[in-house]
Amino acid sequence: MEAGNHTEVSEFLLLSLSDDPGLQPLLYGVFLSIYLVTILGNLLIMLAISSDSHLHTPMYFFLSNLSFVDICFISTTIPKMLVNIQAESKNISYIGCLVQACFFTIFVGMDDFLLTVMAYDRYVAICQPLHYAVIMNPCFCGFLVLMSWFIIFWVALLHILLIMRLTFCMGTEIPHFFCELAQILKVACSDTLANKIFLYVATVLLGVFPLTGILFSYYRIISSLGRMASTKGRYKAFSTCGSHLSVVSLFYGTGLGVYLSSALTHSSQRSLIASVIYTVVTPMLNPFIYSLRNKDVKGALRSLFGRAASCP
Image 1 (cartoon, rainbow, N blue to C red):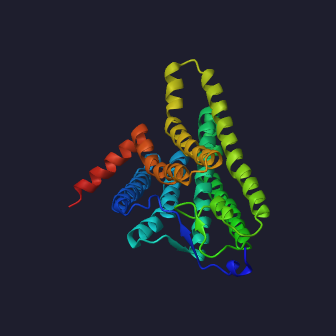
Image 2 (tube, rainbow, N blue to C red):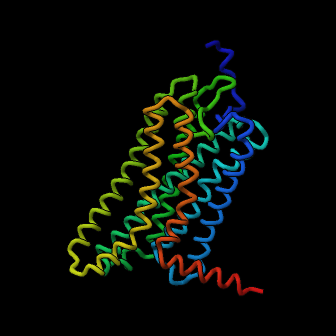
């Protein structure tokens, strides 16, 4: 390419879900509804946990953090999409794209870390019940969350600093509905070897290792339950893991779907659909999974609604 094509870019173009003008109002309505439902559902989970003293335990402390992260997660991508649909524009500024990529990396990493910490919490509760209160004390729980924020913040910052070294051609279109790291690297006009190496290393450290920790925790949990004599006790112990297992399956299942759709197909539309499920549907479903499958959360929500209804 000519050197003149590598001038400093001020904006990128994002690929829309559909170029059909007649579908834009429908897309706007659907994604606005999903966004509002996600915000409301996760806020209700946070309010229910904070208002019920019975839920002031490590498991629900991590759940309230997960709900907060899910609100931030979906707020990183959907508002910009809605603005672009309404304005009939595909533009996103260079700085805006980097900020979006940074926050997306932070919140998807925090989801990953929190699901891992929640698996460890269930492992301690079931396999070491006598030591649970000592091990999972408030200070240690707070430390785990703060360390997760600290690690993922620096990982995301390093990603962005590496991207800032790259050059891009004018009028570059990112084949996605938001600025995602891997997609940004695909459209760079300069060498991205260092970026790709760091991306792969970070994926292994922050993706594969946490998943391995979750699988190991549940292996130990299942082994411990197998030694229980009481079927009722076994069911009661494992029932506390049901919601978490559902969320883990949804998170990693859709994440794997996004990876496979990108690796095995050259269709941008199929990759977009997989990404929508991963980035939009998953945060929306998490509150429903925890409220429908968890008696304690359902009870706290009923009490919350009861108090709200009794207010003059």
